[in-house]
Image (cartoon, rainbow, N blue to C red; front, top):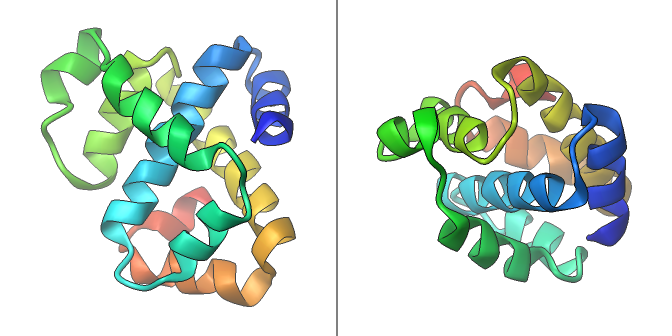
Length: 125
């Protein structure tokens, strides 16, 4: 998890805590929205991932994320990320960093299972 947080932090130019919160929000979204076990396998291969998910949910988010955080799907995730300090223009890069790392951990086939299971997610991979 530390390695992924460092990658996201460097790529987006945000501090490590913002990166960790953003990763936790994305992983929580994947776990909630993906109907199969591929996300659980990813979480098992990322020590500290579940803790980051819990921390991200308890961190909340003000601004746009606080106003729109009740929305579901990708729009709701985008609002939560914005509230956590990720600019809307950074979300696609965040997705690329997380999914590139996930592919290293799971392989391309398992990653494709996750992506294909969530409508609209492919644009962020």
